[in-house]
Length: 290
Image 1 (cartoon, rainbow, N blue to C red):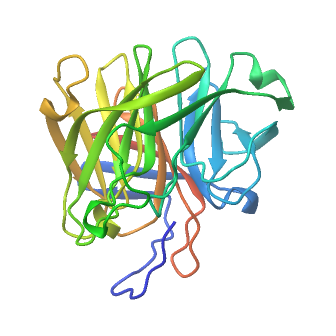
Image 2: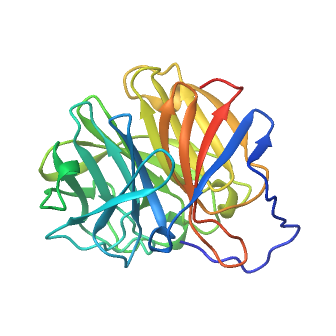
């Protein structure tokens, strides 16, 4: 979550299709107020869009149809929404909720909740739990120039969960570290495997807020407030060695969540912010491909 201190040149376009170069962004629906702090998305069973709220909200997941209509709410019992920030899923139909927000870099044990296949039919579910910590964090919090242990982005690939950190260092560097843990219940040390230096222009453009991996195309999508990164042609999980395409959004929004819809199409949400709008569900394509 963030606050704007100064906003210049912001304007709103009340049209159904917003086009930014190759990005085409369709507004599907205004989300209900209870979802205004949307922070994660999963497109589930080619039928449902599932979202969560971030810190301080109820431990719930919200199930929508593809028109953005709210179908049901599922209580995630025996949990606390300390700072839920992103979601992902595996090939078996399990989903993972990342309680990974760590704005002040003080948390020593972070959580990921596993909702086993079949949860979609229930109104309440008790999840399996992952507890993890970063292998290279020694101070809680570290010095201001090393505030690199917050995260708002997780994704699943071949039996593992990957965590991309959100840079909160001062000065801002755009650094995003990549950590890896097994996608199974238990206590795990998050192994540092690599890093990206996304843009360092400004934190409110370049901070990583969500990610999703498409196993069919083998492309990793990384969302920031102002940009979309597509990463391909990497070996195994050496993502930082892949080819990177960058797409710019036309104006600044608090874009918090992304999930693949098709080969080059996604669902996306932005968090509501007074004065900026948001709280919407979008369908996004690139180059006209779906």
